[in-house]
View 1 (tube, rainbow, N blue to C red):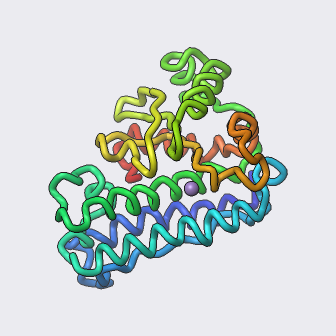
View 2: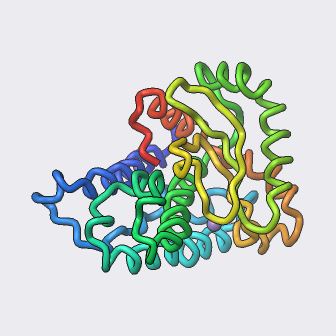
Length: 242
Ligand code: MN3
């Protein structure tokens, strides 16, 4: 429906390829060097979310903030090839088993990487509402679309300092709201984010200053529900990696 769909598919493929390439059995053909996680390009232009999220914020957010998480993640992985061969979702789902020397770096920067991959993936749309099976789940589990948005925005407003607000999804397709501090992610609970909004000030301060609630309200206008539906189907199929 949008011209971005093909680029979106490539972007999704990039995220999936990260996990596949990181598995030891797949490493022989295309050996993945330790510390070689790459920052994918956005699946749309920096101005795709205007006027709700300005192009400069998108550019800085992707090119500086997300890039910094990727760089720091690679630095942490460089000396730990046995960790770098594992899919990022497995690393984040078993942080307690990770080398103590890099555990905090993995948590902050691995979390930052996957949270932003998900975030870019589900934006670039024109808002509206979910349809079909996903809308039925919203009605069933979250009291309907309007209540979901109201509760999500309220939860996002209550995050003290920096963090995220999510709708999580399990293998049965059940939805729930959750918030996390810093770059923590539902992957750390072996859950999955269906959608999430970044409430770090870097996500909105240039345009909204300290008016986080205005940003939270406006953000729904750029959600791409077609891509969210793909994530929902993947979650139910057990193939949603991050
Ligand atoms: Mn951010």
